[in-house]
Length: 148
Image 1 (cartoon, rainbow, N blue to C red):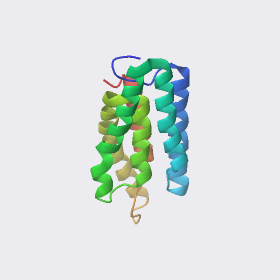
Image 2: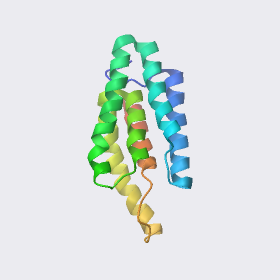
Image 3: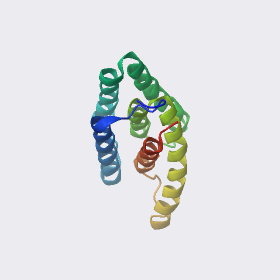
Image 4: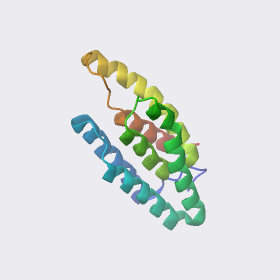
């Protein structure tokens, strides 16, 4: 583990990539981020970090998952985001830990704004923009950048 970012090692990296690819694909095709994916992501993050980082890893994973939920909860409560997006942020929070998921949320907001403008430019009559791509890009950018 490095300075608060929990996602390390080839298994952790594979988990982060797999969750991101499946989330983006299902959100773009079916307009849903499935519960099985987000629950599996949280569990994988918690179990992986408990095994590799002991109690500290477990604490960072649980704290990151909780913070991932909390950071997007106001957006969800305002009706501007689906529940799957909220749970996807929790899954990445379990992988990235608290500092990493906070950076991921900021980056996802930036990527999300750009993504929404592009999406609405090509589909001006749609009522909702799939947000999983922005969350995944934000999480991956946080992870690559060190997340702290």
